[in-house]
Image (cartoon, rainbow, N blue to C red; front, side):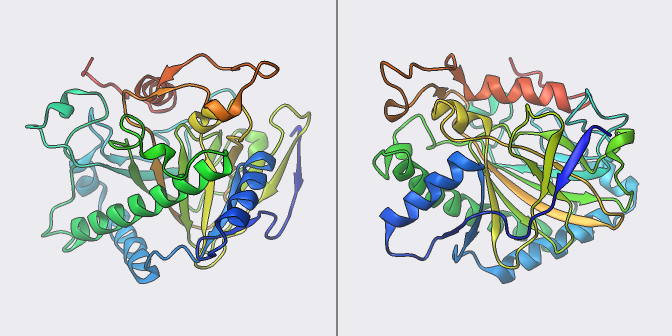
Length: 328
């Protein structure tokens, strides 16, 4: 297989959102972001009963007949249902698409809003309220709460980068973010890396930060050194009541490589699995370039500037079959 596995239990740092000592919390976060790019977020304040409802409603949707799910097939705005094997996150190693189905919900941008002319912006689509009563309301409520939590985490990240806590509140950075809630359902198909069969192929996330809620089924693995031969994969265990948070490519670029966007994958143990990532991305037109505290004469910027929107569009075109946005 050309791969080795190192299995660890709670091998990630815990970042406590309830701690009044912001200096210590930011220092702990900084170390986790430099070492791994993944950490557990505990005492985060988001209502766990609401999160349970989101999982329940997610299962209700994926239990629908395919005919019903296809009525909300993902559209040009990248909102809606993505079928099994539609996504291929690691085309070089996968023999087929990921053994998961999903549902994207973005920020609501009505067709009447000028921003709807931008790629990846537009109205959401939802299953019929007659088929799934309360589904849309549950998702919208959770989306709003996850947005608030993401902004709080962004403030901590700013402190961890030796910036003012409100740095990312500046106009043009995160005041109109491309946030996305994604519901995921992994089939019971067992993964076989040697055969190129994965729940989710190896990838790093594309944006700024991801808040991941999972059920109690393991499967998530991280690779701290993507260039190692063979690659060493570690299990990240589910942790009740905690989010698994990881950094995306854009934060790695912003931090000039100081903070890590780490390779990860899902190797399914052979049972159904549900997870709910929330992706928090910069504004579509935000220019992501080296932050002032992350470069010097001896450490010049490593990455050319890129707009957040162009970065995301490029990634989606590679990994999602048939993804096409006609807004250019």
